[in-house]
Image (cartoon, rainbow, N blue to C red):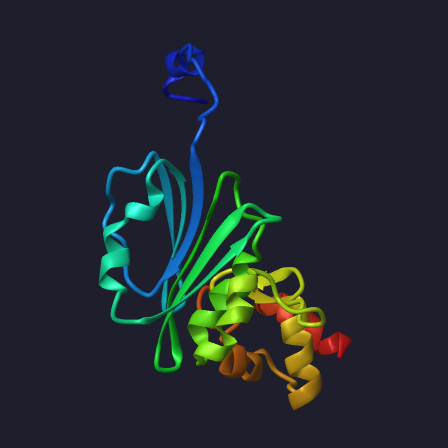
Length: 191
């Protein structure tokens, strides 16, 4: 029984939020919240992912701090998106995707770039926004670390893993909250 029955009948007015721009930002550095119409923050391994909507999204203070890094830009006219990646030595520091609509980029795959070394030459893969053909990670099994079913199955087949602990040591899947361990066991049984 609800202890706040009066709140169930509170009238509300809802209207769509019309944003001039939408953006996805993946970065190693936590973003200071500024004057952004809409923003969500998701903690990812080795960084943060931000989903944003509003105007003047390209004016984030973070971009000035990224100037010392190598910058690669790409404009996808078909998707109506601008994509920018900043690299230092062998690490992706930040990836920015912006357009007039919400990006359909593969966020799980993009987040994996913060868990591996990458050269500036490989930046073009990240700027594509989606994995190359044949590198589909599959549906997400481990939400904590963004590890997909096909990635786990490939690791099991390639390394002969027989235990979720082995999978976790290699991919980190199942090493945080543990809720995906039964599913990893099932994938190991399927072989």
